[in-house]
Length: 378
Image (tube, rainbow, N blue to C red):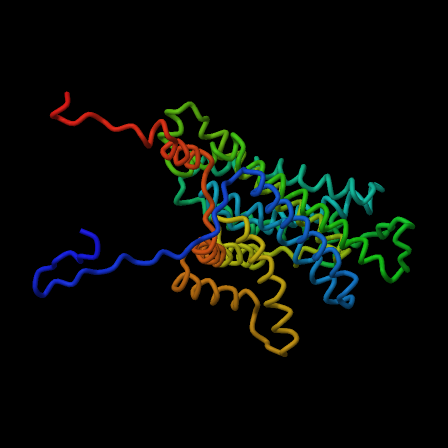
């Protein structure tokens, strides 16, 4: 009867239903989703590109370095987070890209963009070699093997110093010329380099996203989750693992090629074992399971040394990154990117298209108004 409250037993409190906070809901792959993602990428590109005209020379070049390192760490994030492999020699791939770009431009007269484009090709080939080496050993020994590659690389570069420049370094003999439309002075060419780095980074981000959601990316994830089940499903486990290393090395080398445009000299001491360990720590702090983790890791690689230098601190940046890794493991084990994503998910709900179709079908009249016959009417 209306107006009559339900009776309750003595000592029993009827709890009211919790009030659910409304969240913004969006379907992945819908028109709104594409506009949101495309608009975010476009706005980010314009803002980052404009920083070269807003910041002074030093800060603008730091932004360029951050973007290039973001591309390099995308490869490590793919190997560690997507493929579930341990790689402690990513600095070698970055160094190979830097040397490939510098040598092709300085010694063989390649155009700058052609030299940058050569970097991922060299990285992909060397990544295949490392991947094949990883197949011949057990997973427990993968870390020491990649560690040894990181140790041997600087020695190899110094041994062939007549070609690589050795410890003295190998500089770019000429700068990349900017189009006349920009009307840049000789001392402002860093702004054109910055635009090229940002444009290539956006293209690399789109390529990586397509790789992750492609058949190759799905196969890599399946092998990482359960290699036996993946092999039963017809996936070539050996080939997939090699491709995972190759793609990761290609993006690392591309980032190395972009770094040369910002710092036009490459030396053996820039790609030591500690550099590779710093890359690994940065990705783990940022979040190995999200591409945003690579961006956060690149930001740390730039901000930590700059902050310590500006404040006159003498501690090693790798030591600080190691401390951040320990702290992140205790506070946010999955990384900063995953913690941020969980926070955003409490405000925005992203639904999968299949789930949305099921929900819509469940609310349709043909389904919602159907009532199964009970036992008495059969």
